[in-house]
Image 1 (spheres, one colour):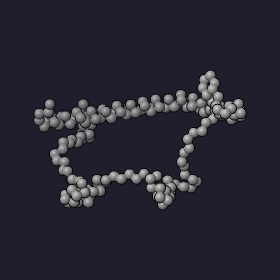
Image 2: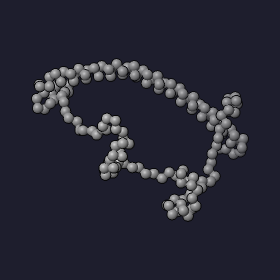
Image 3: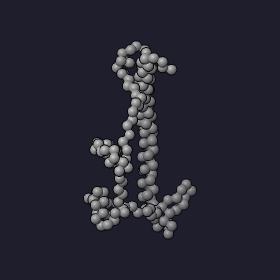
Image 4: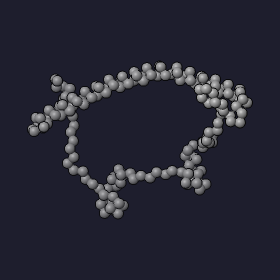
Length: 164
């Protein structure tokens, strides 16, 4: 328990040292994580390349032998099923078109329901207008003052200078 200003100052010192130690540990962990990712990539990358090559070979084989698939357009084998199937269609832009252009065309054509508009109160902008409390109340808002909130600020340079 902190009972006086000296103990409060020592608590700040301890917090500063803890923060320093946490940062040092995080750096070590980050280095370890990066090394693990690199090792995993070295192991996984050849496997992914092998899988991709096999997928290409399977596709080429099935394409050459599509007539053997019949109406089902697929063939059940011992270790899986292979063939062709129709996936659901997907909307994409025509060549040279951008999302903003498509949005404008949809709105112009009366398809507003196809466009999402997210509205949000920009509290910082409202605050910067410095509106009277009565005006804020009419707009459904109130300005709350946050008083006497506890804070502390560590002087890391002085902590580094003090021997452990």
